[in-house]
Length: 217
Image 1 (tube, helix red, strand yellow):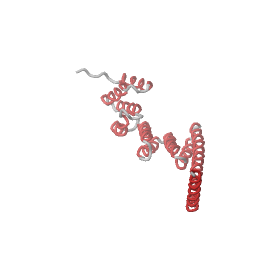
Image 2 (tube, rainbow, N blue to C red; image 1 turned 180 degrees about the vertical axis):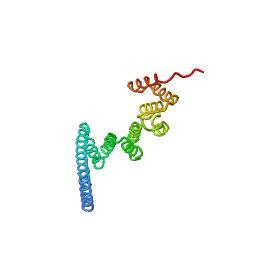
Image 3 (tube, rainbow, N blue to C red; image 1 turned 135 degrees about the vertical axis):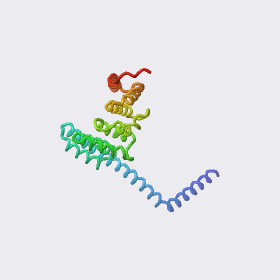
Image 4 (tube, helix red, strand yellow; image 1 turned 90 degrees about the horizontal axis):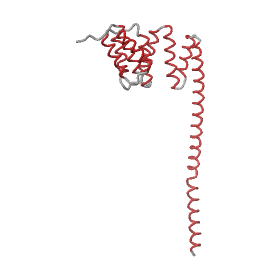
């Protein structure tokens, strides 16, 4: 008798499933098609992005080669094109390199391009900081210490990625301005930072030796 009931239950389940299929099969098929299309579209997007990145990488390498050959005008044009058309990562790198190419013929124009990158909020914080450092480096021999301080002070904080370079530039700027107090301040900060690179530490020690001794009270 139990076997009979089992067969009846099985038949009822089959009948219910058939009704559900008849009622909702169009939706199930449509959902399956959408899933397949979505997966295919995503795979296609990934493939296209990979192709764009590969093309941008090749173009970037070619632009660097032009720069290495001292073909700065051609390299600048190549980097500008990459900055306008490439995926975001290469766009940022290309903007930095284009500014460097411009700086070879016009340091002030190059520093202005770096300043534009530093002021661009769509750019990452580290890239902004790097642009700020490079702009200041181009203006070291022409800009006043107060202006350099305004440019770089925020980049000297203990957690700033390029703090070592910022401190060195400010020490040099203060030394050029005969502001020995400020120069010593930045050189001491360089000396007391355990993460200061050895080469930069050596340059700071050499500059420290050029400063007059501290007057004894």
